[in-house]
Length: 180
Image 1 (cartoon, rainbow, N blue to C red):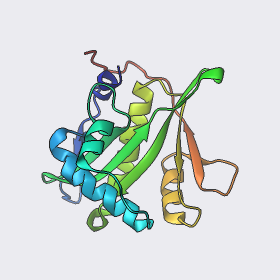
Image 2: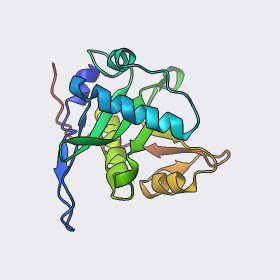
Image 3: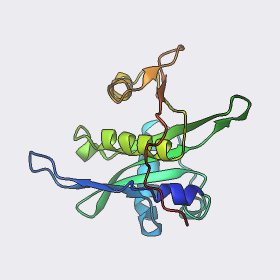
Image 4: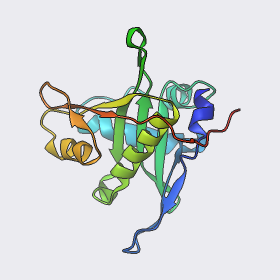
């Protein structure tokens, strides 16, 4: 079922008015794994965490019939420049579904070009297609730039230290979802 939901029309390609290259947001595929590993390693290095992930564990977690992480990638000119990885926890006792945006990464060379926002928008579309009630994302408490991006994308800070945000997700409206 999750793979069928990922097949909903996530793919999008845009050319900016300023003549910027086209950005293609799509589901991760097997040939993307080396680039995805590079980006995961860069993200964890930024936070001082040693990456323990391998190509095999990435394949296990992001591909297949029931991926553990729902992963979207941003492609520009045939190269991967960013990714968003989410996982779908639930609150069974409340009958609620949520999508937790676990990782958001954009290569330093293209930061500030809107690719991160596009990945957040595509993740929100995925949450709608999965009939989620809301999304959750966390940031480091000392990362005001990321916090500002999430607020600009419609998230609201949760009452805590200001490092966790949530966003209500409207139910899908005529979602074009392909069944496998």
